[in-house]
Length: 255
Image (cartoon, rainbow, N blue to C red; front, side, top):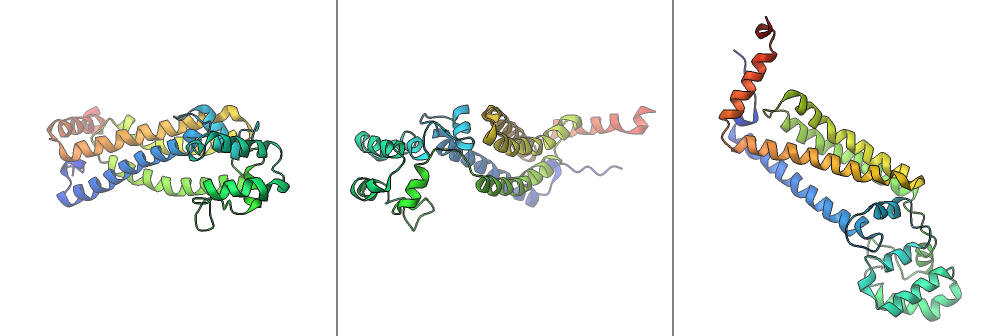
């Protein structure tokens, strides 16, 4: 007699454990999407994530500075237009130190340093050298930041996909599609991280970033929803399908 191991037949304690994990991961995916929209999604100064946002984030907006891009993007509501234009013009003039104390430093103190200070994780705009750095031509993400974010994503998110795929592996699902779904997030995660490096040098590859993110998000969503449904909804039809599929695959049925 074959011992059937499936989500529908798990003990209640394991169903609660797996459900809690999958729900938290699902909310985490939503928060990740919101974070992308609030950071990369406004890189071009327009709401919503676009190819230009990805290009500006990794390749940079080399027609201007990071300071100008931020003042025309997500920081636009933080200062009136005349103040933003003055900062942008200073950056376009090369960020001369001679104008720092009389013109730029007072603006920074009034509009910027409440967030950009020594006690925050943001660049400290009380210091000229930090403001000067963001006033230079925007060449996108640095090699150091790409290396740091890449290894965090690869190590951290791979573990998430491991456990989501392990739970989904117990679901009643066509074997071919189950294998594809389990492998898809890992494949698209590698594609996503690789695309950051490619876009850093060739902006055309920004499309791969969009495809990678959509690919592993969709596959993860299907696995999470399927697993939750099969743990808590009536299992009769899934068990009948699963056992008939296993019988069709067994050598005895072929003979």
